[in-house]
Image 1 (cartoon, rainbow, N blue to C red):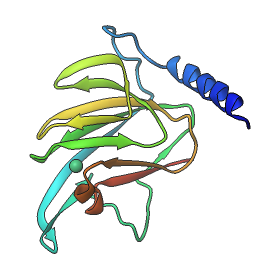
Image 2 (cartoon, helix red, strand yellow; image 1 turned 90 degrees about the horizontal axis):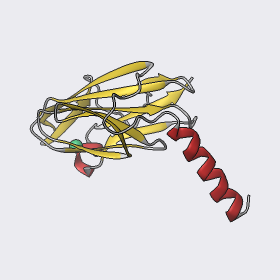
Image 3 (cartoon, helix red, strand yellow; image 1 turned 90 degrees about the vertical axis):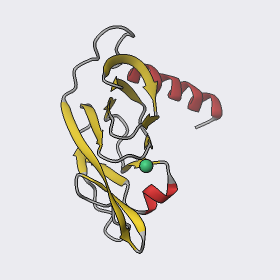
Image 4 (tube, rainbow, N blue to C red; image 1 turned 60 degrees about the vertical axis):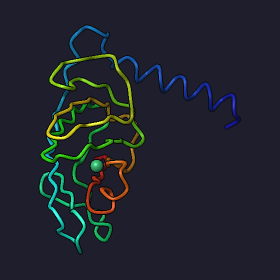
Length: 156
Ligand SMILES: [Cu+2]
């Protein structure tokens, strides 16, 4: 595929994704499914380093076990509850997402692929499963990633 075809293809993909996006100031488009995750820090649990869990699981590089199975075309809402005092830069690979709640306020129309989650706060964002393949969700802080703060999504 030449560069022009790639650009056009990228624009077509982006336009298709935008059909799922809400208008700023209006309620978010309802999600097909909600995935709730609680972020917990286990202080000094691994050789003096903090271990991070998502729904009680620290990601293992040995097993690489996917945490959730996505179904193509469905709109997922990820609801994150930060049960720690640390700030996390949450990043979802291979998909853009729409913020639907942050700082206790509902929102729509804000498209990102990284969002900051403050200590003891909650955030929710929606993404459409439109890019099949293993998809990594993680905190961008390297020490958090290295000690469990990652989750793999696979497509059915
Ligand atoms: Cu983090």
